[in-house]
Amino acid sequence: MTQTVLEAKDVYKIYDMGKVQVHALSGVSLKINKGDYISIMGPSGSGKTTLLDVLSALLRPTKGEILISGKPISKMDDNELARVRGKTIGFVFQTFNLIQRMTALENVMLPLWFQGVKPAGREERAGKILERVGLGDRVTHRPTELSGGQRQRVAIARALAVDPDVIVADEPTGNLDSVSGDQILKLIDDLNKKEGKTVLMVTHEKSIGKHAHRIIHLKDGKIVKNEKTRRN
Amino acid sequence: MFDLETIKFAFTNLKRQRLRSYLTLLGMVIGIAAIVALLTMSNGLSIAIEEMFEGLGLDTITVQPGQQMGLSQAVSKSIEDEDIDIISNIVGVEAVAGFYEGAAIAKYRDRELSAFLIGYDPAQTEFIQQMGYLSLGSGRMLESSDLYSILISENFAKTALENKELTLKQKIEINGMNFRIVGLLEDSDMASGFGIINMVWITKNAAQTLFDIDEPVELMVKVTDESLAEPVAEEIEERLERAHGEKDVMVMTTGSLLESFNSVLGIMQAVLIMIAFISVIVGAIGIMNTMLMAVLDRTREIGAMKAIGATNSTILSIFVTEAALLGLAGGTAGVILGYIVALGISAVAGSFNFNLPIVPDPFVILFGILLSVIVGILSGIFPARRAALMDPVEALRCE
Image 1 (cartoon, rainbow over the protein chains, first blue to last red):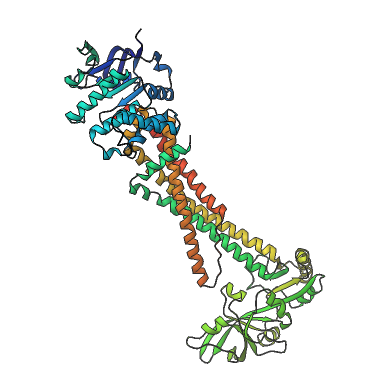
Image 2: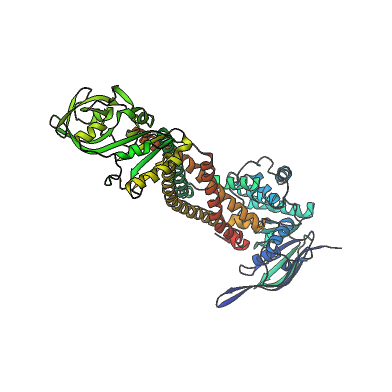
């Protein structure tokens, strides 16, 4: 039986901008199962990033419910949500969002610290993961001493540190050249195929979207198409 | 919450902060330095005063005219010569010395000098010396038979004339009469500690017969044992009140003098420290400003940390710890600077012959550092709360 890791039930996200109300999401329902590889695509302003934020519980919906492993987030307070999010979801951002002051290893250790892993275990685990993403020889480098592609690998390693079920990536190749971008996509593909990670990725490039098993097309805050790709 | 790792993390953050943000720590450094310097110096002052009074001896009693300490001395003439006999008759009194004081103009050739005459009974020389006065440098002390003989301090001898020193056996003219310098007193003399150098010591006999200073301005009484100081002082007060018909003298033991000096010092200390606290408040605003800048600078980082599982309280403790560390740094620098300032002032005081001992006090050090850490934490709470309550999505999208 397939296990649902993330689920959106008739979700609305409405921003009150004073005179006008902006409906970023209007009644989105979506189930993401363990092992899925999903791309969210759509024109800018279609709500794809909002959907990603809401699904990954960074943002609470105005209406509707989000369930993480079957548990509704409306019943969790902010601190509990932070813990559940930290444990279940690994984030990869377009702009990496690494902490510049810290080495690659320290960056990867950070989420483990937040999860309460003991220091010795943290370092070992972070080292292994950096090796896994091909940066075994760059552990003591700071982000400024790394190329864009390498930085994104550190970010992926950081996302993987707590062994989350889901990897959420917002335009992960948006700031990379095509060679590095391809390498990052290959890494994400592997995580899904070889390690069974659920992947949820926002992109506006068709060629990248096609890496997924399913493409969710958004327009004006609504899902207009839920398309299976040939990769499935 | 404030575990070693948060402290380590906060420390890495601070290490990479821009230099300008540390400039706002100056207020804190100056405030703590002022407090430490003031506390240390007033401690030194109180030690110095205590030493002075101990030199005076805890077995001595001062009798002064008037009802309030120090004020009416110059105008009131309520002490009489006979009081010396009255006091001498009290059981437990070992010696009584009267000081017959007055101002005079001294002349050496054409040079006029203002002089402060002090007449005393040479029979009491030993007692007066015990109190720290009249330490002879050269020449001899006065004797009861002396009339036209004087003692002056070496310092006065050196500085009274522009290009010439006064020396032993020289004659100077006071109120038209010629006096001979028979002894020079050392500069370590207690009186020079109070900054009075133009003292001219004469015999009681000379004061009464040549200068018409008939009554002593001040009496010093020595008791046979320290424990008798208080009861004898009370007895003196009673007997003099009966003899004069009114309560017109102040009787103080060295112990009570010391106490009143210390209480004045305490009030002074409190006022100065209040002023220094204003500086600490400025320092607190500085830290708050630094932390607010840090929160703004690191908005995206805060968003990222929240996304990867940092709870609000984790973020809060990180920023509060950073503020506490800033306070610690400011406080430590302040304590060090405070001691340097105190040592500098002590050196200046030393060059004016005033001994101001500076002793590092663990209580003062701890107080300075603890105060700055607490102020740091308090001023860090508001910026830290701002960081903690940030919306992760907005923080991440912040440019």
